[in-house]
Picture 1 (tube, rainbow, N blue to C red):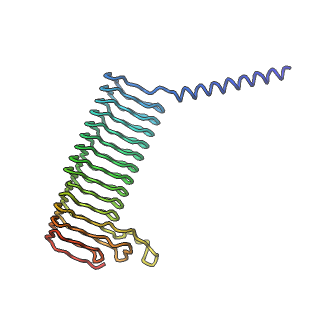
Picture 2: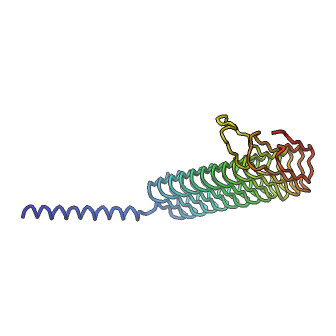
Picture 3: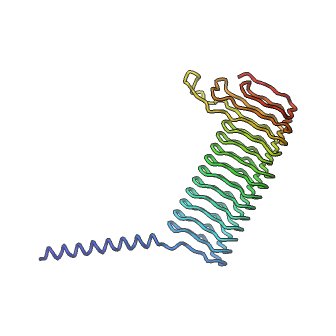
Length: 318
């Protein structure tokens, strides 16, 4: 009898423990976000481990905002310091004024007219809406998009994502994308160079102060675009660990199109390794286009030159 009673008590205790654990789990799952109400002021930092942080319209946060496993959401015209979310997205609505923004595993979305310092994320996209202004934008595995009239005073860098620069936007320095395309539209300006390895480069009525360079991505300069420096496709293997006997296979090199009304102030160059064994690239300089430098291309390149080339055409031996 005594043994049965102890067994019953043990079962009841175990049941209470399970119920308690479930209740705690439910409370954790339903945890309230960290809130700052609209039109209010918060002095000091806002920190959260697992809960999202939400700041209402026109609020002021006199400090940093940091969330480890939750997103950060700021309403319109919010003023705050640096924003840091390890595993969550960061959203700043229109007219916001914040410091630097960093997210390891989440996207960053900035509303129209928002200003921020450096913006970076490792695994997520960055979107800067119309009229937004930031110092720099960098992501490893995500796209970067600038809206109409947006500006980045320094450069833009991504490894595995496309970059899109809308009309009238400004980038103060260079743009780099290893495996994604770069598109720059009407009346937009890039104050440095544009470089990719495997991504295409498209200019449509845009201006680039320095050069364009790619390896396996096509380069298209169209609709009255202007390039201040050279336009280069270069497939020269820097790796000395292989030889022609190893059966190395190249990917197809990128081709170059210079469209009507477009101008290249430097040279147009296509260089290929002597052992290049993929499809031959093409060069098109359309009627009404102008290259103020020379055209220097490997003799295996297929050319169609109808426009102006001030420095002449040179065909190089592989």
